[in-house]
Image 1 (cartoon, rainbow, N blue to C red):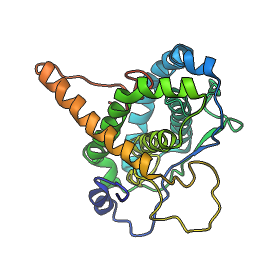
Image 2 (cartoon, one colour; image 1 turned 135 degrees about the vertical axis):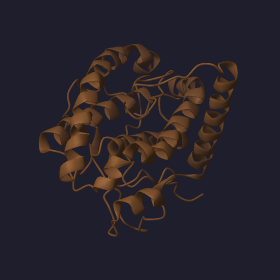
Image 3 (cartoon, rainbow, N blue to C red; image 1 turned 180 degrees about the vertical axis):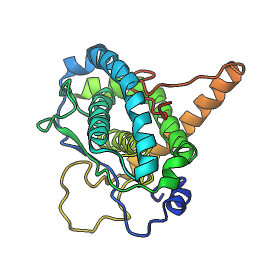
Image 4 (spheres, rainbow, N blue to C red; image 1 turned 135 degrees about the horizontal axis):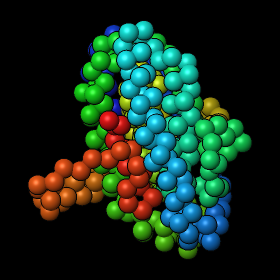
Length: 274
């Protein structure tokens, strides 16, 4: 199955940009083994981060709103706003990777963590004002993909947790498929917060752009998925769709919104901030 970039053609048209754009990078220095004790209590250990990120999310909403108006008139985010939003996304991504059981090293309470094994790279730059204006519409396909894959992973989370707890490590297919979900969420967040003009894509890895024989910088850069990892990604999508349909059937009169928080065990639920 090839790379997935739903909505990319629409976004490219709105941007009016022909040259290749920089896609946000998720870089994880994977450990061979994980502490079973940390795996056992992961969901408890991450609670302080969830509380802090919830509070920061409120601040981020107002910062992002100011940034949206600024980008609409100037064609780019002000440097200070871009720096704040990048730091927030980096912090959230480190916590997401920790909750996703990809790494057992505790994320710091900081925007910048150069020594942490989980790093991101975004390059804020010029933005097409038309794409900025219609961001609320353009983000919808990517938000759906991010939400469905995260929900599908959440259905499998307990099984994955037991496997990692028993083995003391993350099997390759689980690592690859989970890293793909985490990276797509990073790219969706960066696009939504105007940190990049590149539409989220390549959910199914970087095989199409990887040059054979070229050394890899880390386990996720580039992200090369095995057949098992691709199968799990498809499974997440199927389970996520079924979970969404089941939720709609069981609660037809309710409408749930997510404020960028974390839903379910270890499943960061990405959706556009207000």
